[in-house]
Image (cartoon, rainbow, N blue to C red; front, side, top):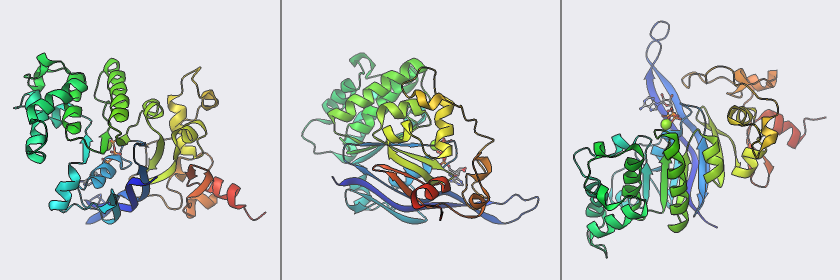
Length: 333
Ligand SMILES: Nc1ncnc2c1ncn2[C@@H]1O[C@H](COP(=O)(O)OP(=O)(O)OP(=O)(O)O)[C@@H](O)[C@H]1O
Ligand SMILES: [Mg+2]
């Protein structure tokens, strides 16, 4: 199988003001700091991690919405850059994004139908089907009834708005859909409906998805693969089954343990709840060695000074943690 999306050593650094009390001038914030991943056609990769670990920055880099500091993004074998040239526009219609907040993603002055028709008028003027008819058909496919077509965003519920956003993203029949926390702004009762809808559409349209979420239950439900991010890096990656059932990194274990419910399918995870200490460190001042060491209950002196390398621990499972490097490569004893 060939990868539809391939990201190599991707980095995005921001220049930010230092803390003026004791530091002046610009400091470097490493929002994304060397990410390598790929997504095969028709598969869904989940990206999980705490707030500020670089998930949205990754999404923007993948779509060429912001330039990378270093590294490459390839979509369907062609490089994606942030230069708004013809190649970018051509690729862009095949890569769509669904944002967290449907209200801010929609134009308040346009009706639901006009929002969904707009991308066709821009990118697909000479399509086989009339833009309005194609838009109506996609709106019905996402579960919007005809009586909602002429409503403005403020006249729709949160769930209905997110369906309009989805219809707008899917009406051009993209091959890649990047979802950045697509359900976190929705009511709990509506979340499941939108997730089920995404699951169905993914199959019907053979969509490849990058699915960003901090809800591991949703990730378990919808994703084939999972990448766990910490301070701009991927610290564990593999099939959703492997990573969520047999998490190897202490950080992944802590994330899973925080959401485990008694009697859950993956009951092994409930044994010994791990409490994650404190907030993630400031990405302007990334800790030395393994960046997770200040919060890790298992950290040794070695972890404080040496960065771990990515180690394969199973057929579809890699981890960056000294505990596993020692087990898999031998610790010299
Ligand atoms: N334009 C910018 N200028 C400076 N720093 C930025 C910029 N955009 C993002 N950052 C910083 O980069 C880091 C990663 O941000 P990002 O939005 O990617 O996180 P996230 O994982 O999506 O978080 P959340 O779960 O809260 O959405 C954060 O520390 C953020 O403050
Ligand atoms: Mg975000």
